[in-house]
Each structure stands twice: as C-alpha cells, then as structure tokens.
Image 1 (cartoon, rainbow, N blue to C red):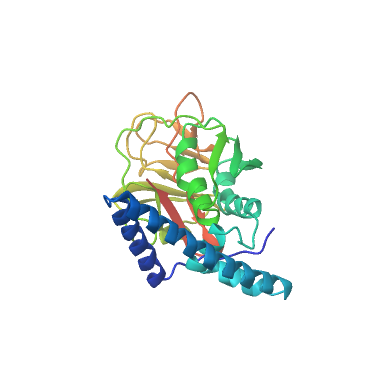
Image 2 (tube, helix red, strand yellow):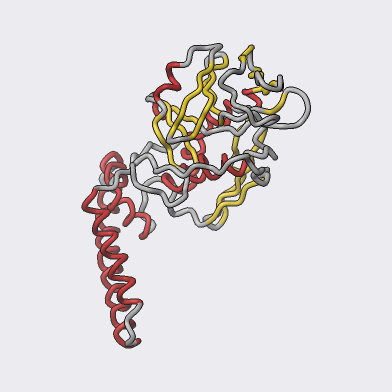
Amino acid sequence: MASEVTRDQPADGQELLERIEQLTEAIDSAADPFVRSMVDELVGSIIELYGEGLTRIVRELAEGAEEALLLRLAGDGVVGSLMLIHDLYPVPLEARVEEALASVRPYMESHGGDVQLLALEDGVAHLKLIGHCHGCPASAATLELAIKEALDEAAPDLLGLEVEGVAEARPIGKPLAIVPAASGEPSAGSPGWLPLEQAGEVEPGAFRSLALEGVDLVVANVDGTVLAYRDRCAACEATLSDATLAGPLLTCASCGCAFDLPRAGRAATGLGQLDPVPLLRRNGHAFEAAIA
C-alpha cells in the first residue's frame, strides 16, 4: 500500500481557484474570437511554463530521495492539484483508488459486503460489489454516498467509474434529506458526511433512536459492530424506536417484522429491507454518517 497523503485545501488557494473560474467564464463569454484565442494561447503558455518548472522541482526531489517531502507537498491542496494536472503526483492512481476503497471497506463489511477493484484501464476504474452489496436495493446509495466520495477525494484525476452489482435505488416513503457536507459548505444536493458522536455511545446488544439534521435514524451495536439505518420499518413504515433487538435481528413493534442488521437490514423472512446509512469511523475517531 502506498504512503498515505492527507490532502488539505488552504482557504487562500480555494479563493484563487474560484477567481480563476470566474475569469475563465468571463473570457469565454467575450464576443471577440481573436481576443479569446490570444488569451487561450497565453494561458496555455503560462501553464506549460510552470509545468516545466514543477517537473524539474519534482525530479530533483525524487533524485534526492526526498519522498517524505514530496508526499507532504502532494498533501497540499493547491500543490497536489498542480501535480495531478502535470502527471507528477507521487502516488500512482491505482494505489490511491485502492486506498479509497480501503477507507470505506469497514462500512461495506459491516453490512456483509465488499467492493473490489477489477481493473484500471485508461483512467477508468472497474469495480465490483460483492456479498450482500451485490444487487442490494441500497447499493446505488452506497455507491454514491461512500465509494464515489472516497474516490473523488483520493483520486480526483480518475476519468470514469464502472461498477458491477449496482441495483436501482428503490423508492422510499419520504424524500431524502439534503444536508451540508462535513466541511460545513452546502453541497447542492450531493451527499455529505456529518459527525455522529452518539453512535460510539451505543453499547453492544443495544440500539438508540437518533436524529441527524432532521433525519430520524436507528443506530445499533451488534457484537461490537455499529450499524445505522433510517428509522422506518420497511414493512409497515412505522418508527423503529420501540423495536426490540435480539442478536442481529431488529423486530418492529408495530408489525412484528424482523430485520437482519448485519445482512444490510434484509427482512429475516419474506421481502423488505431497511434503508442503510453509511457509517464510518475515520482513523479511530468519532463516527460520521452520510445522508443524501
């Protein structure tokens, strides 16, 4: 496994990127095609110039066995982005994809599933969902909430994603809540990770009803594995706050339907499945939940 790079985007660097986007849009809207072509050539020449300079810097560091310094530079949001643009990033794309999948694997395994990288061809990652995740009605949400976000963070230069075993998301009784990303910035409808510290307080063999950004959840601890689901019975749509937990089975107090939590919330008998909520514990710290 490649050395870990923690990417950080400084506030001033983000402002510069936003300003560049604004100027680019203004240039694209310019009426004079000659001016646009001259500006495009100027920008291209500047990018080529600093790209050549950055290439020489990286080459000198690599020849001087300064791997730790290269990784620290790659962890800077601005420098790392420039390295990606000029194909100078010190960690190979495949290694970063594998590390991204490893970061979400605890959640996948807690629901009896896993994700495998089958191949990386022409910048496109070919993945396969296995176990209970394969063909699971919640697999589309799992893909968007956990896997895609991890890949966007660790491998933004990935050109595409093809996944086997993704089922269509099934309709739910109420609309999904839109919540801000973990950074606090609005995500315009995209999923976001939010802290859920109370999840770590649930004792083995117990469960709790919690609310996160207006979304009702049930969080259970099954033999030391913490699992989260939306607080809605898949059979009768009643709340599960009065349910009973016996081993892996959470039984609805209203209709008596039991759901096997480690098996992605599938009904113990018959059809039906609870809506799982991705729940991760990053680097041994407090739990985070992803809701879309």
